[in-house]
Image (cartoon, rainbow, N blue to C red; front, side, top):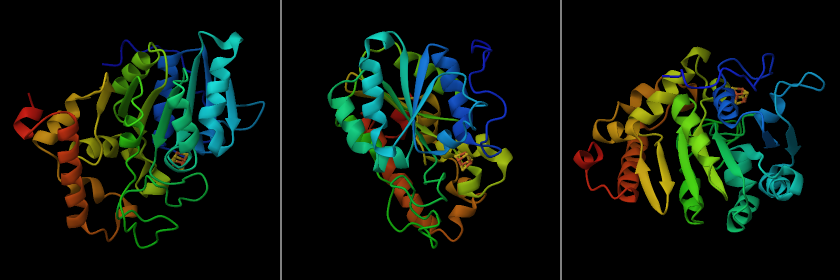
Amino acid sequence: MLDDIPQEEYLLKGNTACAGCGAMLALRYILKAAGQNTIIVNPACCSTVCQGTYPKTAYGVPVLNIAFAAAAAAADGIASARRNKGKNIIVFAGDGGTVDIGIQALSGAIERNANILYICYDNEAYSNTGMQKSGSTPYGAITTTTPTGRKDSKKDIDLIIMAHRPKYMASASAAYPKDLYEKVRKALTIEGTKFIHVLCPCPSGWRYSTEKTVELGRLAVRCGMWFLYEYEDGKVKLNAPTKAALKRPAPLADYVRPQGRFKGVNLERLQKEVDEEMDRIRALAGIENAKEASE
Ligand code: SF4
């Protein structure tokens, strides 16, 4: 399945990520898809720290580390510089730097149709600074600022981005690397602003044992906590794992149980949210019912 993915590695050994980090797994395949001719823009987030320290940085492409709020604007500036024509300019930003602090610069960049690929790696908390709640933290999740579990719901950044009508957007998961690789390859062929939202399980923040990153990433899709789709020409197209999940979802408890952050969660309320989200994604994709989703 992964045979046609390049052997070259641009995320080098010795980076300082936690064992089992979903964000680094995602970045590895994103860089394989983008190749050497790439500049990464990192706002403050785990992926800034994971580079290590000069002169032994672990990213095999140039990186601009920039303030939280400025990533999309800085990337637009780089993309507009004459000498960078033809280069892949990719923002790799966490959920805090995207759905909260970086949202205005991202909104402006899409409005200007900046020729950048903006990737939000979503580990559903401010993991780098101590696991505080972000706008992307799901209902019920324990963080250091929601010690009894988040009481309200995750902000829907995808609908916000969709309202800007970007050229291309997609959701992906670190646990489906081929799908992520292909979406990045496709996005980089399109002129203008592209947005990819990648779920990246985080063993430290989600409190599960490190070898379960891929298993939990897949379960998130199978139980409907995360959807895989593409948005192009104003239309939402669901990808196969999400179509299967809409038809026959895995039990939500299988996803929740291994994660310490969901200790004491009201599973019934969380299930209600999942069911509502499933209805919403069906409506976006123009699908009336579960049977149609499987066709
Ligand atoms: S805190 Fe989470 S996202 Fe950050 S490096 Fe560790 S595993 Fe990765």
